[in-house]
Image: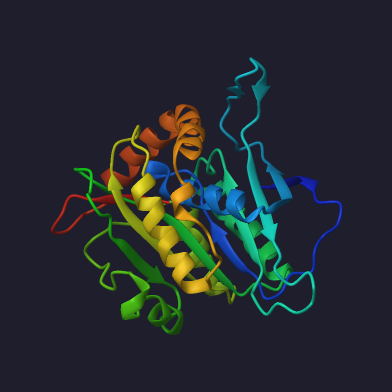
Length: 270
């Protein structure tokens, strides 16, 4: 299944050993909220836009009463423009939707991994939510990985990450999981940061997204201000949730049907 790049930046930047971070819609939109905030806070610029005939057969109506196609996009942020900074650059994947079936998810992830490697990126982070039956007061962040050495970097005591994820989640469904699985085969190491959130399709996981961002800030010292994640981003994500609630609800049903949760009744979809 072909994924077409419909828009490219006029100038393709040369990135310094970039980190790739994925945040597409899922439970509580945890990953989507976190990555959208990073894009806005860091002033990241659009690099690619994608189109596929496997997008959902629907369009959105915006606040100007005009139709919009669903979007999946990659942004970039450089820190080495003056040639002096040693800070690594970043690529961010965001969008309104995820691929809608197994085949398109795999082909999309293959395309993303090609782009990642073409930009000299050897490390990825996927993000998402762990759906609980109740709203957590202070969401925990769990981690899994396709590389044991990288995994150990994220479960150090000061990284604010729970190290034991086995038995807490069922299958990681969607791009967040498949990117790690295929990444291992393609020589791209990665971790998935999954924050607890409420498992309702209409719930926004702002708290969970903040905890994921705390981990990313702790790891990379980007200087992001989490206090800014207030009214504006909640309004934006509420609008997104209206767009994607049907897709999330259907995907959640599939994930719950396939998952055999242990200890707690939780599930996750990337």
